[in-house]
Length: 111
Length: 113
Image 1 (tube, rainbow over the protein chains, first blue to last red):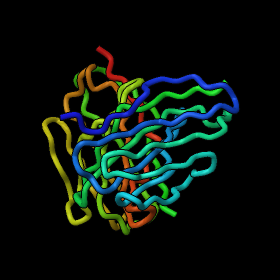
Image 2: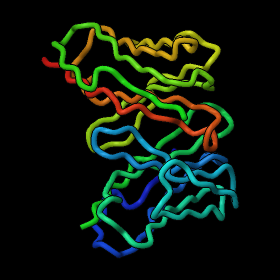
Image 3: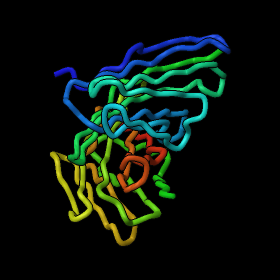
């Protein structure tokens, strides 16, 4: 079982560059989430989706965009990378059941 | 706005000790609470999930309790082992933002051989 797959695992970006963090789940989960984790902090919600075609902002959405064209995929887009976006990014998914499943994370450094 | 705190921030114990990690949350209107383990540079591994109607859950040497009215949960680890060294995150799921999880900052546990 693949579960939640994130790519890439690591990335270094220059200020002003753009990139897309990929997240795919093969469990047919409706709910998908993007979080960021800064050192010594808990995870903070960036964006979420309750189903294909439906997305909404979380706690820290500025500088990011998402789309959900299929149930499986929930990419996170950074348009103009800034040093403040240096973080570890986690994607998660769940059904209507309570338990959430997390990907292995993408470690992003903006220099 | 839901806020989750965890005490202590870091803990170092000798192998074999029993230990308790604490989690507090400000809004008791939660659906459930989940404890995760995170190894350095890795993702999150789910340990235990407690529904809001439950008082505790057990898995092997782990026992998690929930007191929703007081906004507290504890994770009890019995007979700790060096392999238990990791960061333990507590997260509550409530009605906000697509019923997502609100995370605490974690407790970094070191179990010394």
